[in-house]
Length: 160
Image 1 (spheres, helix red, strand yellow):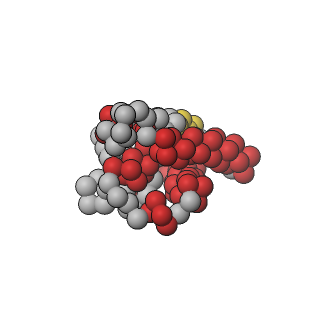
Image 2: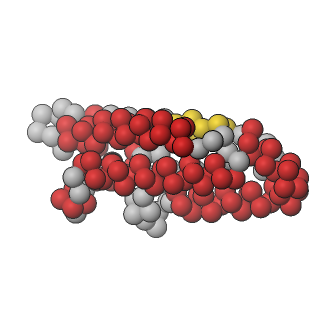
Image 3: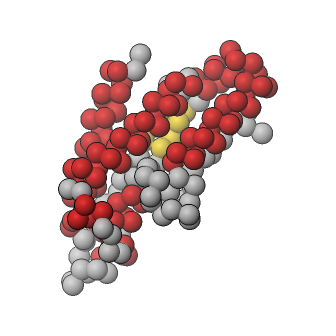
């Protein structure tokens, strides 16, 4: 049952629907699944009880890594379509829209993990001539982590 918590994560998923499409449950589908559990909680606990349960819950996010990893694991046309800042803004925009959706249901306690230095993962180090960290991906990661912090600070001010 869902009274003691739920996990909607899907290994390999990202903030973008396009990240590993068909292989994972994307973030937007995870939110749809969350809303089904919200409806279930309302049916079991009533509106007030469900809102209280959702308000006390902790919402843990580890998202974004695969959105950047997917850019560099193979030739990806998105690398030439968007600047790093534009791509990061799209990823962060999807994350903040999900936070806002959960906030509307009563969610108040959020925790986030930064994207790790994926350019130093073996799969990307193999792409460099000397086996060193793949620097371009590290630029994206740094921009993402900085933008996520800024977006979260803005949301904290915006959401009552």
